[in-house]
Amino acid sequence: MELLTGFLVGLLGSFHCIGMCGPIAIALPKSKNLLASRLLYNLGRVITYSILGLLFGLLGERLEMFGLQRIISITLGVIIILSVLTPAAYRIRISQNLGLYNGVTLLKSYFAKMFKSHSMASMLVIGLLNGLLPCGFVYIGITGAIAVGSAVNGMLFMAMFGLGTFPIMLGASLIGSFVNLNIRQKLTRLLPAFSIILAIIFILRGLNLGIPYISPKLEQKPAGEEVICH
Image (cartoon, rainbow, N blue to C red; front, side, top):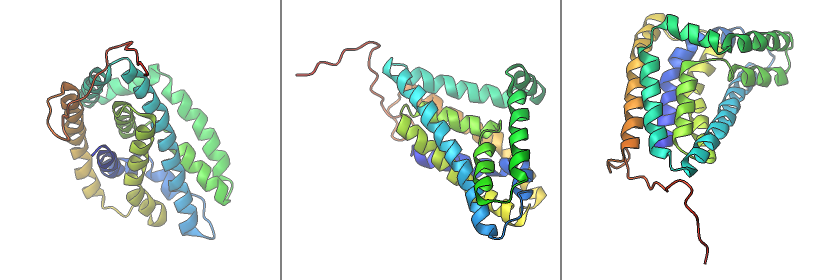
């Protein structure tokens, strides 16, 4: 269920990605083997997402050890709702205060170097770097990786997220902006609603209501509980 959720977040979020990362995908350097180069680019993104999932899943695993699994799930759900309801101007200001745009400037310099090369390796590196660009839906994916409470599951969650973005982003990198602008705009309007639905699922999961798949009973270990081996 969690892996399917990761895939769906990526699939629906990919229509948002077309607007954010589409220009990079469309402007990729020409290569003799077009399909292989574009597959490498998208593979690079999936690898970066998987590594992020591993790191943040490990964070969730460590927090779960302190008996915070339910609190984490509810908190992440609330954060997603607040991020959707926060006006764009405030989100931009928060990003500036966190120094995210400084990181983007650094990434742009690396992008420029890679775009001058037409090698297959550069395509993979561009994809790896692309996965680090600030993106609201990647952040939602990361919250999911934290919520699953496991390094391995966090990695798998974000890998499925990346695979969800694969079809649309591969299409964009191969034949340009093939999705009608009007369709993209309509789907983009649905993304906040989808984010809130996902946030509600996280909150319900944390409430431990015993609802199969949606809010299963979670075994919460008291903080500092000692494991006794016989």
